[in-house]
Length: 211
Image (cartoon, rainbow, N blue to C red):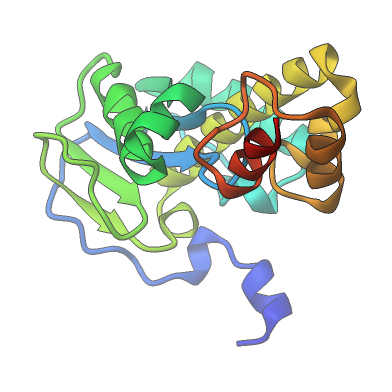
């Protein structure tokens, strides 16, 4: 498979998942924000309504910001249930990013009303919730509920970065969304870490050591 073909994949291009659950309260779970140097890691859980299908669901990274925002509104309107939750930068530092990500996922799952009965989680690990479920590698490309969760999480975290950019425009958060780009690393070196930066992440830790 060529790189271009891989980039253009949709849910329809994958074989159907074998899911050990046949009811309607299946929740897709995904997260955004493991790699950035700043801000919360955000997770979302979504139970879609089979009677109200949503066209165009796929990995949020493959969508334009305008398309993500349109789908975000449609998901919120049509889903049986959804919840967006997070783990703060302080929790990332205290727990590490792996455990903080799973904490955010569990918070999103617990916020669903009606509650989920089965979980489909993007990635290769379940988040340690009591509900049964399965981890799905490339899940946001393989199941619409996970794709919907990825969109809600991405829109929510991007909004946080735009708000942070309003307060600290010199860091360029609106452009790089907190990821360790050349622009972000240069700003970090010039202006130093903000309270919102993850102090346990190496580039931030190095700058803090210089203070």
